[in-house]
Length: 145
Image 1 (cartoon, rainbow, N blue to C red):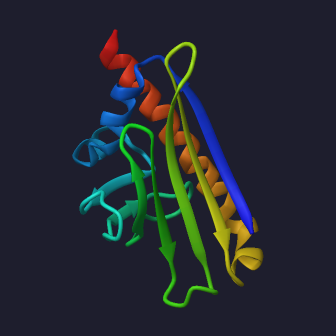
Image 2: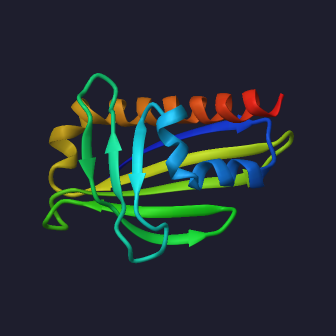
């Protein structure tokens, strides 16, 4: 298993961060990594995402929402056709912090393709998460002030 994690402190109330995070319609306006999300944020449902990994062309995939704790966290599982090939378990977490909010993304990868692909994709995924976190911070702090 391999994991990537990116966290940022945002000078905004956790409820504001949560609202921006689940406002998928606004993603094209501020999110450089996940440029589109369609579908209901409900456990068991599939979302349709468009991602722009660092240095790569945009691609789409359809993760399944696994869990949601309103105001705090949601997680999805992206999977190839066969579970043991490549799975990505991604969580978005919103936590109160002083000052403001800590926003964290983490993705855990499992499967036989993780090791051979990691050196080519791991840093791109982490870079995309960091870019999204910075853009969310900028989006919220710019609108607050």
